[in-house]
Image (cartoon, rainbow, N blue to C red; front, side, top):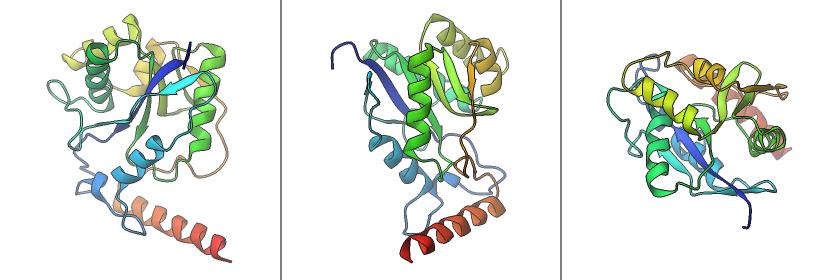
Length: 203
């Protein structure tokens, strides 16, 4: 696709799931799909907005791209992916990162995020103060910040990375797309919401 912006979709599936008490990436949704399988399927099937070309979706952690050095949360996953892309796909201009624990996220929100970033030329973009999903341009400054965090310096929060990049906070779409799963009660709430949605569709 001539002049298309190449973007690598990335599932952030690292972390120790301490609040959940077990690996949340392997939690099963109604129908048997794991959270990891759900997030990966979302990215694999995501239609590319005009002006974009999506590279094959990658997974950080959970048997995918391993963190470099000691894990420092999502930024370690972003750093590891950015390193591999710099070596293997240097033409890749940005990451579209989604957390493994946001199973109600839909293609509409991700396309909205990409379109807004393309229009504005944002170095980073997210919805309001929901720091994930995240659009992150891969440039010298973002790579340098990720490297500093990976070697143990700097604030490892996505919020701090976003601020360092001068990110654009977009209006928050309506709906429950942003519900995430960190604790057992949050997972049960998501299961109940999925059941409600399936019941409505069946009527």
